[in-house]
Image (cartoon, rainbow over all chains, first blue to last red; front, side, top):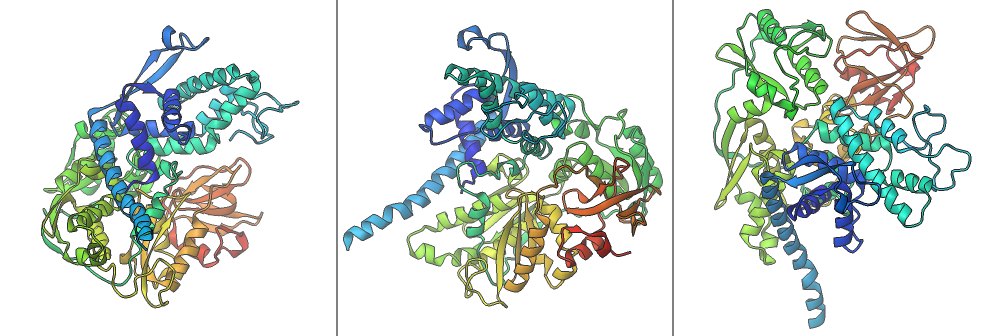
Length: 120
Length: 501
């Protein structure tokens, strides 16, 4: 069973499992990956990152914005980068397993109805 | 808070469309961050880190919107609006910082799956039932002697922690042992709060040790699960972290799941395997009972394994009664009287209902409603709070559940705007009507202040709204009988004329 908060956590941990990232990029990646269906709003994302860091699931460090990946005017400013910790990797595995079991349960219901209707 | 006219100059005012600013001041990122910073109840270093990160976010967003053709003022307004209300965001940050392992900040339900609703559906069981632990191994826990229970602590906020602990030992005539290494890691900060030479940071006036520790943890932004705790062991008072004692008090208990599995026979008949049923039972327990502590959720203090129909739970002893309660409720699933909460059952039938709370903490709220006169017929051994979903779960007849719902509706209110709250926390304070209007609260130290009204806020205890600027903050413990009277009147804000004199 995954609640909304666990789902948000799953999304963030999954994105960070692919490599270090920062808040703004995470909102972009979440929207891009879901073709715009998932909006990870900054008002939700940043407190969540704070919480995950407190729990030791992610680590962070400040780094200057690099010239090669900055927009005009952003160069030289600081940016907070997040990375998945070993504990976060374990949590992600548990969240994925929970999601898979939830999906199986839902599939059992979603998949049954059309077949029953078709057989009548 | 980003859009209220008449606020201080450093707070910004943003029109609802974020673009047609007209004669109003343009939105300012710095002003908004300042407003957010002022509302966050976290250490200064943390506030700065949050503001730096949000500043970087906002500036990048503004830049992007401008690249799309928007003017800077409108882009700034849009970017700020996307972050939402500063007060709400500050609250989420404070919660994330104060309760690092709780999931309360996510009550927003970003993906549309309301956690509490899912829990409600699963906990819709009814009827009495019990699952007795099959066996248990539990180390004995020494009860605090009367001398320690009777200690009243009065201390200045600059008192050193080491002197504080030693003074308690002297007052209770017991030797003291302090686990400094454990305490110095609390909060995960580089500058530990609990250090021998640091000041305790809170003025204490005649507090019991339990009440003092609650206040001190709160001041350090720690909760009862993660903060300072004490035990009496071998005739000594031992101060350490709650996690340390949890590890000491971990007990292994086995529960017989036969009844809970049998209650799901219809699912098994429909094709579910027994293992799937057992897995769903385990998942419900780890979701409802201190979710952050279970290894399955990334925690370190609680584990469970099944062997056949037996569930082995290794967890701090304080968790075991909750595990037992959840399992006993599951054991009754499918029996006569099963119904969704509040529907279909006779008034006299026991039902279970989950009350998700939005604005107040479930654990504190449960303590408050236990004292309400109107709810005294309720068997509170059948009520529990779940911090994971910030819900109160109650088993009771429908009529009583309705009363609980009404009481919780009255409590679960957003904090009043534009009011300067004053915490009132002393069981010994006195309330009387003031001749000048309002009421006067007299604290244990003789301090008096006048309020226009009192508000119920289980998280903070009770709050008064001071008249003018003269209100003095008086840290004390909640007075529950007064709250009861207020509830009997079914009013959250109690007009003064209705208060007992």
